[in-house]
Image (tube, rainbow over all chains, first blue to last red; front, top):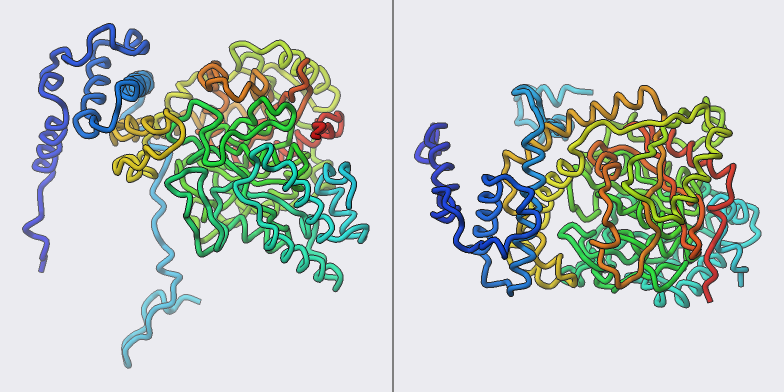
Length: 138
Length: 469
């Protein structure tokens, strides 16, 4: 009955896959919390000083991730600009994550179920078939 | 040919003249077209003028009115639409080279609404590339080049609705349509000395508008008075089954009723004295003067303070994550390199690294902040402060320098989907306009528009216009 059986993964497998994927995306030095080789203090953006040590590592990991995927597109000035934006983003994230949230605090956007289909005209039922619930609607 | 002073009249005044047949929509359109052809290129105000289509629409309006089918105050009034709104068969560039040849085969819902009330589309207004969503450092960040401020052509109009601001300020059309994700209606309105209205999120359909940030983008009018904004808003507001982000029918629609608005009880104003870190002296003077006259015209004016943030951080993370979705393909493909601004070419890459977890956290904090702001509106009907702490700055100045002050109210207003209006409230010593903004509770667009009208009944700043030669 279920032709997607071969693709089915359980939640634990999904979580493990996701964890492996994210580890793969971060350069090895970063993943083991070693200071990133690419960033000497003289190269770091101004925002770096305002970040915690963990956040600096994370910001640098963002930068390295971009460089590993798209680095050939940038000249040195552009690389500096990308690094600045990674550190700028990290500052925002640090403040955002510091905001106290209860576990049950729900996000501002909520799912608006797609109900329009109930209002659309149904295709003509086969002869003798009972009308659908939607078709009975005025 | 119509006098220049007529071209600076409000929509309400122009409508009376059209209805009483003092001049026809065709005469008015021809006059605005001639002026637009003369000053538009100097200001870089238009992405595209549409003279043939405009005159066709004007002739149709004239015929209708002649037959007695007058459709209301926008009938026969020429306007410009920001170049991120789809117009069937006409290039819609989003101000950006990668989309320079883009043509849609349908009209944006806003364009349809304005067509239905007989407004005449004169052309597409220039704009900052991709509404500035990938970042930009200079006024020149546009396929059309930098838009010049009609009050001082060595200064910028602000963005991203740059052309819309210039067109209204220079009297090139009766009104314009702009859009705002974060400051793109209010800032050009303040810099250009026009009245600009950002409606509550979800009241105006965005179908056919370039999507930058799905939960922040809004469309609104820029015009010569708050009353004009009210009339235009009434024409474009409403639920759209083709845009699921619009509010339900009864909450999205807005009816223009001047008598009812003016009979409404006096408004309670919360004066935000400490929103801006510091003011440029010319702006401070104009804002103090505006503050002084408010108590004579409003039920109460009391000092107010914004709740604790982190406003800008939350708005920033949401914006960056949503831009990573709306323009992810442009960034990943490398075509982002075709953008004009150096910052725009690289700014989007960091956006791609915002995690789903952080985006969701930002949305959870947003919910809390929305409630905090809603509670503030138990005490006040509208909040008021300067739209910006500085006037228009030189075209060559970097935006980092020009916008050095944090903007918590811009973040709050857009994050919480609150309506806001910027109205002119004076000039600096260098004759550059200063804007005063009113911000209201989500859904109470009427209070914000009424506040603007009340202020403009007591002042004449909105009637000033630049001396273009």
